[in-house]
Image (cartoon, rainbow, N blue to C red; front, side, top):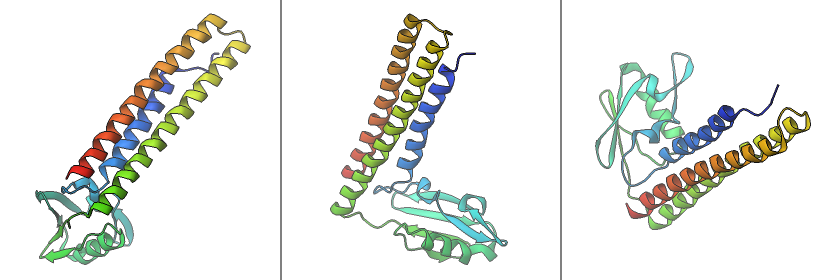
Length: 185
């Protein structure tokens, strides 16, 4: 049976773009974004849990995040978890709510974050190209096994290249938009 699976190739390329968007969402810009706290884990009930399983995170103001802890006993654990995450945020407790004012980003820090966004974009493009390489190798194997003709292989290679170009363009657009957002806030 043929090894080449167009749906699998496309799924893997789309996964690389989605992963990039998740990484970019976690980058801090000047604006409050609840995705900033996605990597935070909290030690509660004897185990490590993601912050969103013990509290509600929202952005009541453009430069403030509020974490509403569901169980009053977990407030200090949430505070510790946020501090340990090294996000550069200073938690302030107000009853069961932990407020996180976002400090202004310096020009130097903005450039670092824009460079980091570019690195994330480059990693995503590498992942997409690796998927393309896998697809091309599968097509060559299928041709060797006489499961597809040379013409079919060439046609399918063009198809894989078009998919690659499409997802690389999506990656570039997402990265460029994030870099612009970071630098202009």
